[in-house]
Image (cartoon, rainbow, N blue to C red):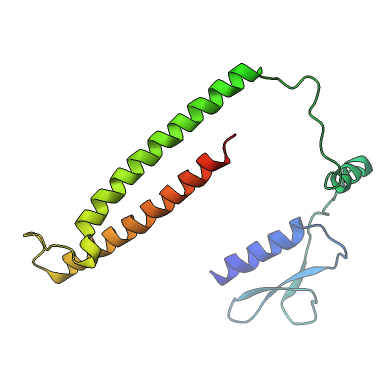
Length: 163
């Protein structure tokens, strides 16, 4: 496993952009353990012939565009598809209706979970003779309650963000 990790480290080192390149030696000790080193001064080391890594820098025009993009708003291309106002309003209305429906479902789910959770005093069922099953169901209900409350908050926030 260690040899595999060393090999991976060597691969990642070789594939990364190289600022200064040096020789790599594969050293094998008396027990057959392999190590990669940057010096071959110990016995059993052989120089590894590695391919040269080429790097290509980004064009200067791209660098300028990315540095200026934070300060200037990006204009929409002229050939970008546009939607008329009535279509957009219909889409927004549909979206609001979908979110409202989801909110109603989550609120109904919350009522059911709260009823079953009963403020932490969950009624024990007949199939829960083992305390661990009961505790697991109580924890699941508690997690479901918290998740449903977060979903309701997120849906309300999303609805309030609509135009």
